[in-house]
Image (spheres, rainbow, N blue to C red):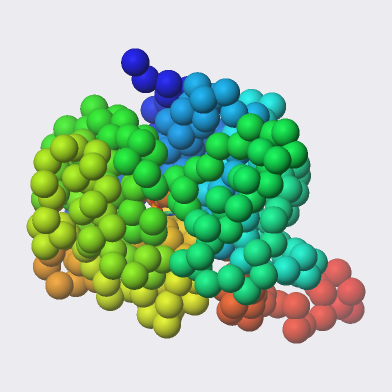
Amino acid sequence: MSDKIALSTWPTPLERVPRLAAALGLGEDDLWIKRDDLIGLGGGGNKVRKLEWTVGAALAAGADTLVTTGAAQSNHARLTAAAGARLGLDVVLVFPGTPDSAVNGSGNLVLDGLFGARVFWAGDSDPSTMADVTDEVCRRLRHDGARPFAIPFGGSSPLGARGYVDGGAELLSQLPDVEHVVVALGSGGTMAGLIGALGERRVLGVHCGAVAEPAVTVADLTTALTGRDIAPGSLRIRTDQVGAGYGVLHEPVLAAMRTAALTEGLVLDPVYSGRAMAGLIAAVRDGDIRPAQRSVLLHTGGLPGLFGHTETVHRTVDSLRSYGSERTPPHTSA
Ligand SMILES: *Cc1c(COP(=O)(O)O)cnc(C)c1O
């Protein structure tokens, strides 16, 4: 029996993007976008599909408080906060940094606040110790009489990854002859789930720099999920879009974000979906993805994060073009 719960309305749209396809040198019917950014909870994004399973397990366990961790601009944390609000559960988010980090906070932190989540600031903890800090927070909550349930970083347990077995099956019913699904690889659960539905050959992951060993991370999750022994070397993963590291704006990603915005009015984010798009562009350039093959970019969301990354905001505003404002307004000329 599954404890999965419903947190949105399915399926999400699958859209053809002919102008974007043409800009990449593909045919008009070659490229499609799976719009998981339009998932109808908390601003949307891929983490909702995983939360349908992990929060389902929390409810089945009798929890009254969800606890999770990530970077301060974590989309997963924001959507956990939204799921908690919808279900009447308390939410505690464990972030590196201090309360000062919130003062200058924007993007996802604004929404975490609106959804009523509380933040445990872990100071300058090493990312590798955040799971231990989360355990400690759960101990304190239990001591205070709460019934906490910890959801891992990114929601990427084998259970959470089942959300993308669902997502992959949904996509197959919309586009049975899909040949490539391009997806940002963060904590790995989304790619693992897609492989569970579509197999290793059709899923191309674009590493975003969030984990040290992306192929091992995804292979371990996929093995636990499917019960098949998946070798890291059998996975299609690009590591050429990390640039200076996770969360640091990388020029090809800004170029990819501009191309998607200018051709389709489509917004990508600088950390994940923009990197996936940049990886897709690179894959077309080097022949891994070719014209006349059906390709899908999974749009995993992340729009609030765009406004939480000041470099992206500044670089975009700096390039804002002016029309005519250097001249005298027409109605005042003689
Ligand atoms: C978390 C996230 C990803 C990556 O998904 P994982 O399952 O963590 O690999 C991609 N895009 C966005 C917008 C995300 O928030």
